Image 1 (cartoon, rainbow, N blue to C red):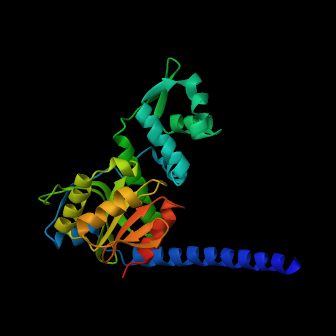
Image 2 (cartoon, helix red, strand yellow):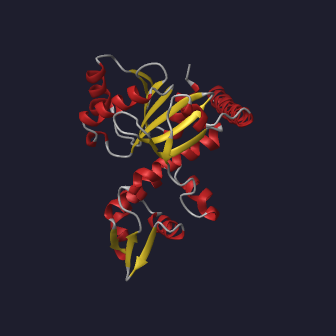
Image 3 (cartoon, rainbow, N blue to C red):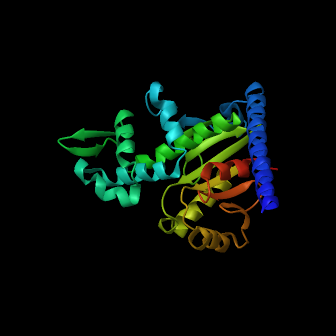
Length: 274
């Protein structure tokens, strides 16, 4: 019994040290990239591309910007935001009805969303100040912010590129070690993403030809049947599973879900880049 306890303690210590090492390496990578920064606009210009429009880098007021970013690291909180935007309006006293889905902290989260101005109370109703379509912009802003915070990567979200074939709307576009990084974001359940949309995404990749591509689906549901299998069929090749929630379908092209942890999966993919 004592030996098993010692082994458990040793494993815990090793994991703690690995976690600390990962944070130190991440900090060093961020520092180096900030010192050797290459602008996104200049790298796009080399390809004859120009950004004509992009999202506001500050989604909410600066004093609560950091708080919202930290909150969105929780998959549970991101799902609450999507659900509230989908509901649009509901009675405050109905909030307990959502406890089973949202958990005991629903009131705390509602107060926070009121604080950051994403919802407001009106005659006893909780009213979303944004349409459901805004949920996509929130995820794009969050991932763009994560790239900067974690890797020192300059990026923009809700980007519109001039003269790009198959549509110039790009969810997140960044520059990483002189290479163009493109992210396609989906917060919909896997079965809501049809084959036609997958084809369009792949055509957009072929049009822009990013050096790195991340297809991010913010769900803990299985993506194998509706996404992986369909992409296998479209590409006529086998997508390789690298780890739970991370797949590769070509050089520096990754399919990522929130299985286990979305941000850890994205970090794993970026560190897997050739």
